[in-house]
Length: 496
Image (tube, rainbow, N blue to C red; front, side):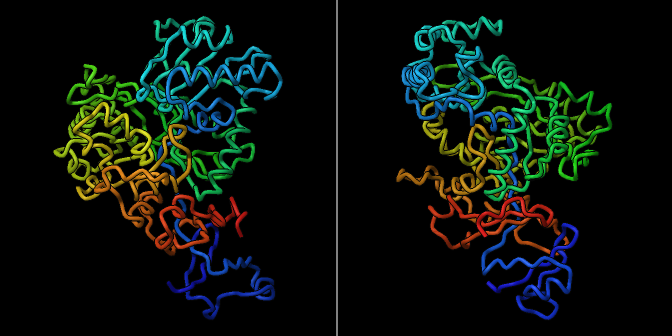
């Protein structure tokens, strides 16, 4: 690689020349004479800024103050973690238990990240009641599609639960939104902290699919100084009439959004998830049933036609292979391109349709590792069609990588590592390594197709301490980021 100088003017890459070329400023005297700021990157590597194409930003920010249940290997172990935290809180050993739940102030105790699909035992109302001693408690599954309640929380929120204590799909989403109704200033402070952490890992933009009317939340945050990254704020069907009435369309810059906020896609959920065994599949699950198709193909077609007429890009949540088939059929009938979110389980005959129809696959590679055991259990003998990243790319699809945070961390290098190795850095062998991407492909899919920094691009760039194409797999997964710039301004520079 040849060292070069990058000139940035008005937030745009204006010139790229070999280092030391005539006209390239250097040193304090040149800086003063030319009226420009000169930053010596000392031979570091610069790549296009990274996007996370699928985030639930408020839910991700809230996880910092909730009980982490991701390590629980059983329902009894999860209940024991909750019991232990309550005992610590009562003894004063842990101080304030969390930003959401504290027995001392009457708030609901909230935990996140449990994976009951791989537990040998099952959640129950009796088990959680026994662990919580009347403190209202709600535990949110790692995929957000399920909430495990105790009796006190069920009574507080006026919901009916069966003996398992579980809410699934729409009732779970509704309660999760309710659990996030904290004061705006408290939530915004958590989002601000999460945004700074994301910028420190090279993030310059996200697509935010928080399940609310999201535009106004971001306008409030930006007005209060949020400037860590760009935001495409998604719209859900229940708000489509409002969005159309206000003249909104995908890609439109939102006035008063500081140049950072755009209208995002129209998000439509048509099936469930693997953890809850509600992803809609062609073949039945071992326990019976094919999952849930929550929006019929006819209903989806109507929504896609409305999206086409209103200039909204559709983003259809489809995890099961049956749901992906339904989504692709609707895209074809509506005569519109768009995105399929997750594309987690896709049959061979449907792969090429992504490219043919102009439908991008917005995928979350870390889920392939998180859901590996659940996939083998529920889709035994068919996992060659699970997370088929290389097959999608080779069939002509455009890939867009993300995290689905809080389902996986808002950490782009974790996603790219999972995409390129199909393995964790824990010694366990790769899962379907034939579906791995190259690092170049993963970087492009994490930067909206940008493979290099070019003149005329927005100056959204990441400065790295190592060559991302040459380091070991372990170092790539934890890539040292020296700085991140958004429109030529540092959003992170702690590594310089």
